[in-house]
Image 1 (cartoon, helix red, strand yellow):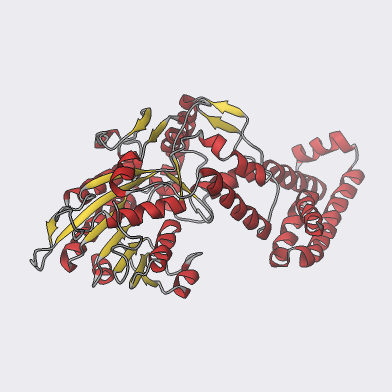
Image 2 (cartoon, one colour; image 1 turned 180 degrees about the vertical axis):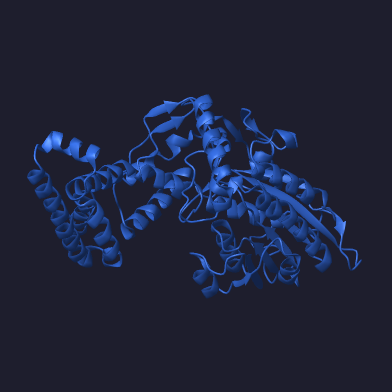
Length: 477
């Protein structure tokens, strides 16, 4: 395409479903920057890390549920183009909430299509996934000619639901508007790779948290396994170009937009092993990089075990106290089986070329997560937590209560009750003293987290205090 930078955006009205999310907020801000008259961020949440910034830049945040047809119709009144980004079930515990996944991704998309028809929306860009053609089979340099995975072959409900939704969107291309004014709805689908960038909230934070706790000891699959990633700015550019590709008033093109009814793979164009990709990020945060390798078959067994356990805990999947599963089968395939695609079609038809290189993108991502780590409470691995908490409880219980086996085990080392009680009193005193010192030190070094440093050091003692002392040394530099 040879269009101006803001073709089809200046003076137009847009809705972005999932507009308070990582991708949605970035897209909303870019639309405003390019001169959009009205941008509505439609989201189930009323606030997010980006909501204040969106409001300051003139984006209208509209709270609503995609599975509520009335909410969708209200949001779509008087708009020219819709970016449908809202989805559910991409990773973690969400993947096991089958009913909600279908409600949001399939029924919600049906509501979007009906609202577009009802209000005469001209363009609909759907954010899909490469998983519509990937179900654990190796794919090297794939393209849009690949067939959809049979619905029964999908390894998770998210991929299956997104496949159904994408096909509904693309088959709705060319549907006449309800007011019968000769106008039609034109649709296309963007299939992004794994998304990264400053503020990304699904993939990288989970990986970082696992590494922080020492729960990322294994790589999965062979070192030559590769997959795609896409930086946030590149994805936003692709979404913008896709909306331009649905314009039907471009001179010399006729009434059929070039992107009408088409899917497009979008990536940075540099397939890479996932664990090599995250290596510089983990290294910059001073977390251990996985060294051991786990075969895909073994990892699948682990993933299926977690899947069964968490399925049995279905009623509590939305609770905060239940942590994310360590691994699920679909995630094993994502990192353990080669699958990457070229963006040649998007380049030829939409003019898409990544504007940010992987090196630039990762540098910006590293800066963000380093800053976030500096502002948050740091701490030891889960093994140190277990050792310290269990050790303290064991000593105190053995000294204060008649627990035969526990007391006998402690006396095998200390030889006398007097020594055991002195050790218990000394350990408690040390923890209290260290926690008070940590609180006073944090008031100078990290005042926003001073209370957290106090309680963490009260529980862990020197295992926590060493991180605060290191932060003090960094602050001196």
